[in-house]
Figure 1 (cartoon, rainbow, N blue to C red):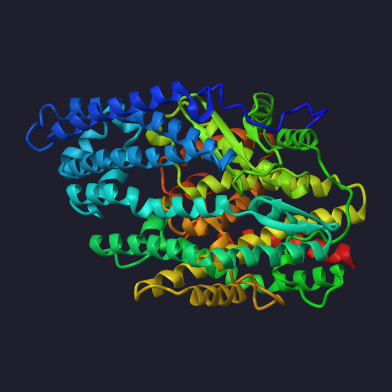
Figure 2 (cartoon, one colour):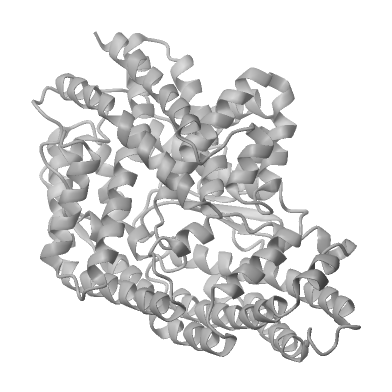
Length: 598
């Protein structure tokens, strides 16, 4: 972008020069493989039952080998993610994705044997062991490893599963990404034909012109329908593999794994969804008001992200960056300083160009103590909020960089807390700094769009995935049924308030096809409401809150969410009260929106 203070393309060469041809990176991978073999031999020889005298020393040595290797694995994984996202046609990057899966399978195999051996240590001996200075700090992680071992198959069978998953389970995810990467969306605007990536076409769903939105929606649906047979197979086979694993582990509930991954109780998840279901009907008034403002009788799915009025408010990448930094500073000077570093050092890939994968993410390079953010930035307030969201993720990692790798493994639900809080700061600031009533209404509505996404869109995803897996247990779920399920769950989640829905959403939403984390949905809503509670407390404490917030973030990798909330917020997440109070804050936004729009 000419004249921009901040470059909207990232710098990967400072980490590994040469992109997917990087010789430095190839050497880095080879060193990981060598060290992994060494660690594997050590873990295999580790005998906690027959060598009790050497147990403490050997365990400490293993931790000292494993922890830095975990950091380097994440470093390599992050680089591969960046390469494959910035250019979906990079064939060498695609090969590296396969290499990453192979490496991760080996590392998972080592971890599986290790945690099984940890679980062989009797409880009294274990209690004494984790008081050792080198083990006490990572005791939560070590205890969690033992718990996972208790809920797993024998290590030889778990290793076999990991090996088979490379060209089975995870390969279905790679197949999905390959299909989407090759999709080209033909689009006609102003009488001219053009070809867009999925990400570029999706951005048009927030266009101010309803005909353009509708055209983009219809065209996208046609393209998803063309590919639905292939994508339906990838989803069914991915799910089938997952369900077979659960069956052999004798897990009788499909939510067992996502709850374990997110370190939360089912009572917490149930309390959250119950509170939302009981309170979200009031937001139907928002749909009715927005329909009136847009001049339509009833909103359709492609109207949800539409601006309620024409607005000239756009932000260049630099303007967006400066807006974010200014308002981060009011909340946390350390957050603002970190964001400045990210912009100045080109840690962000935001250029609007074809060939990029859709969506956005933040990934961490713990060895280099850097992060990288990926998105497609086109200048809207929504784009600015997304950028702030990803910077929140990056700041979360930043404050944990000095911790052991084993204490940096925080779950997705609390990961979404830092990012959503950062997004909230920017959204609130935009509303407060609005120059006109029209601008304030526009920004409030943009904020409410996100609330609706967390309460309804995410709820629809959760309901769809839960019901899909229940049906998949009985056999292959055909495309027609996937479309029906998607429609049913969207209607339920949106309180039957829309005119038209998106039956192909199951195909277009990457999150359904992610293998690393099943039910990649409810943690977003958890993070949103949890961050609302934190945000409310920050306003009460003012300047005193920054350090306590950072301490909360640092604790996210070493306790479950219920303990985290109790320690830092003094609340019980298994009860609806906390969730209801957080939802009430969202209702205040709705009331303000309705009052201004009269």
